Image 1 (cartoon, rainbow, N blue to C red):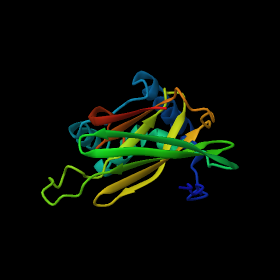
Image 2 (cartoon, rainbow, N blue to C red):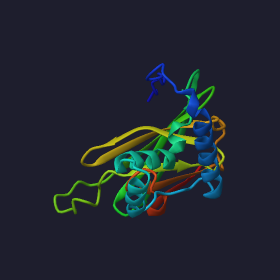
Image 3 (cartoon, rainbow, N blue to C red):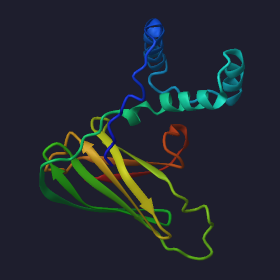
Image 4 (spheres, rainbow, N blue to C red):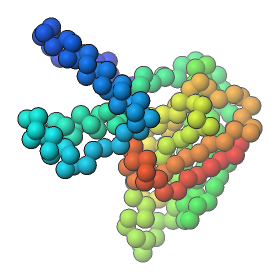
Length: 199
């Protein structure tokens, strides 16, 4: 997924507010530091109160705090370039009635690309919520930037593709891949299954 470059929406800027805008940026940085960069989201009653106190629209505040909660999604993404080779992985795991597989990895000069596949039996009597669409975050010892670039599912299969930078070594034995499942992206406190692959 290639992010479109941002275009300034207007040429107008009131220079009288430059100090205020700088203070806003300073407070955002302080907010990240105090919360260990995990601020969560204010209770809706706080949003409602602040909306009334500061004469701001609630939806505007909801959007503002949602953007600050998901700041890492704005981090520049590495675009894989200079394809080198495929590396076989051939690993699988069964958790409940789901079958997770990693077949191979694409190696580029600046990144690795990995696809997680999930399969299950699509029986008519399965609870309709048991295979609802999930979000999987990949973590590799906290030392690699792992970004899901696309994903999708159908009645009995799901697939998620990740860009990993810097690239993983060609000799991948000993590396641990941890996929954490969330009902919705960014809800860190609501992780359910964790799928671990030891390479």
